[in-house]
Amino acid sequence: QVQLVESGGDSVQAGGSLRLSCTASGDLYSMLVMGWFRQAPGKEREGVAAIDSDGETIYPDSVKGRFTISKDNAKNTLYLQMNNLKPEDTAMYYCAADPSPLECDGTWCYTEEDFTSWGQGTQVAVSS
Image (cartoon, rainbow, N blue to C red; front, side, top):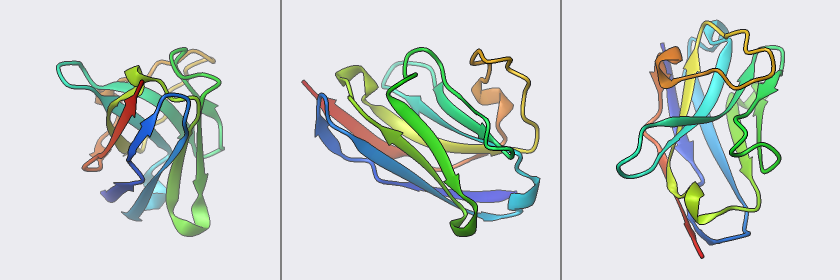
């Protein structure tokens, strides 16, 4: 089990940037994949980025080129750099972790069911 705490959510204007952080504690060595998901009101939770223990990253087309996931193992922290934000990026953003990465072959393939540990979320609001 790991404990995940997100921070960095804020209100920004369209075109702006934010960096979200997720501080992890617990049995981190078993968590071979970490990711970011988001959920807007009335919508299902969707993934926006994932990174495995080798540093391989993957993104859905909706955020590719605008979002970047990274991690600092020394600080036990996962990041999500979000650039050129759009109003449709408004959502609660969640950090997630799991022992079992998937072989996505370059195309986003994660769902929320693929992750077993979750943070409480941080709110991002983008105004036009």
